[in-house]
Length: 283
Image (cartoon, rainbow, N blue to C red):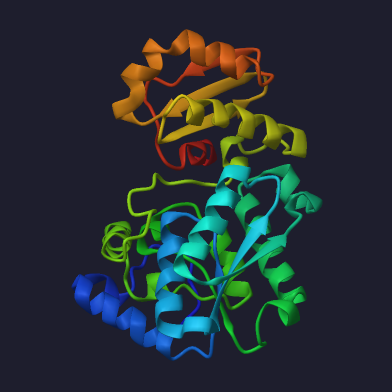
């Protein structure tokens, strides 16, 4: 099973039926001596962990990188999901903020984040899994058309992407998740807190904590798909299109609560949530 290649070319398996993709995935997982699954509790990595555990049983272990860029709510959800699936779960402290390239937050930030995870897994390997177990992560075909420098780190460390190699797109992952009864089947997409910061703005622990507190406000108000984009003293709020009307109706309450987290100004983005919004700054 080849490591992830960066670029836009889809694997040949992408044109297969869902049933054939699933058979291909299971066949490749069965050939592994064991799997160390990079597990964020997102839709893709949860489906991958379930598939690995279903095929490999105790020869699959979930590893979650615990750092300031991971909200506590997501860490708790990762722990609960791994327990539901029945997989052993290792919470591995990582320190991407110690990497200058990560703090500088240029266009390659995700490279430094993934590199920190993969290096830490290698350093702690004896306590996690046998040396011949393969590290895998949840890249899918949808990721090939976006700015994903983390794929370069995966290639360098020979990390494999079984879902991508089997041709899985987001719709396939959600179908698998529904069929498996996973709680993440309809979970909105999520990315680390650092993705809320414009490229070129240096990242620190205090900033990430502020973003986490601001997003907790939106979660407490019942919003499902949201981002708080950090622009110094301004919080730019994105919510899903279907939730925009309610956000504007609640604008004063949202504004006061977000200001209480330390922002001086609060704005609701009229275009709503869109994935990879900060990548537009790279054009």
